[in-house]
Image (tube, rainbow, N blue to C red; front, side, top):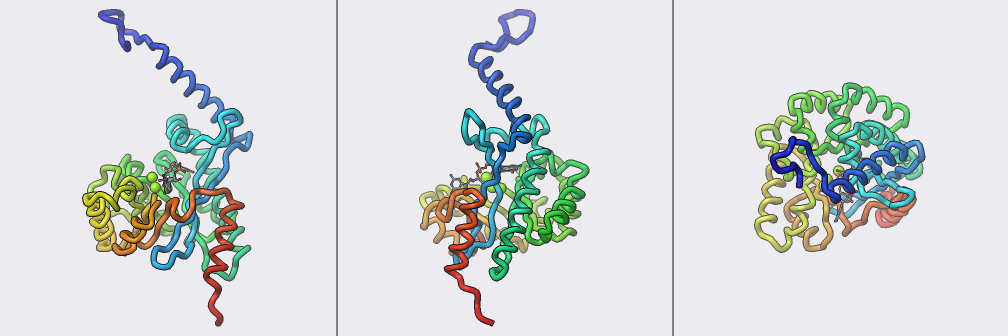
Length: 288
Ligand code: C2E
Ligand code: MG
Ligand code: MG
Ligand code: MG
């Protein structure tokens, strides 16, 4: 019951719409206070090398510990934060937190090959005029070297302003950090852009990996992306790997990196540190 029949054109909300609007407003107010109250937490999900199962790094994923509602998924509050601009604060905090944490781990485990950390960058952050300066400053202040930072940008964020994005990505590349095209396959980027984007790797979206062991068309789709990426000199990361069958197929296709519940769910920093220790124990440093 959106518009009154032949009425004055104003919109009448029904009870459901009203409640939903209130809930959102509530969430938005809470979101504004969440930062000062320290309610955000960085979780880390391992990214492994498919060839030998070695841990290569983590994707940092934000979590919101709401005092009454408990853990709220980023799928729920990131879109809201994108709309009202709070994403700039959350993103800034997340980048710093993830870089500082990775630097601490590198110091704690100096004998293993350096781990990398991936941080998600939203469309709004990508188009912010100060973003380049901010990233450089964060790297300098945390002491993490640029080559150990990966930025994940979704295909759709990229396409919001492709020309601008390409310019910025080129500037970012010059600082030597790595760029990943996230959720690949779900957006609408054309192939003509793909080869122009200065990205290092494609992250194949979970929705394609999910059914590839049981659906031939999904399997062909993933295989086509992998071949294309490799022809363009890019690496491939597959997210959402839950089953050994999926892993086996991706390995056969030559996919470089994998991420998913098969290896680990996103975990707290303390739990992630245990995963690093496990990996070190399974891959002793070679004697020189
Ligand atoms: P994403 O960047 O594509 O991250 C991967 C998502 O897939 C994560 O969800 C992760 O928990 C989930 N995932 C990974 N492996 C599996 C699996 O095997 N099975 C299933 N069912 N799920 C798996 P999460 O943590 O809920 O994050 C959702 C999205 O929220 C992210 O998707 C990203 O777009 C956004 N996000 C998270 N943290 C941040 C952040 O700090 N900044 C920004 N801008 N966006 C963020
Ligand atoms: Mg991501
Ligand atoms: Mg992704
Ligand atoms: Mg995704």
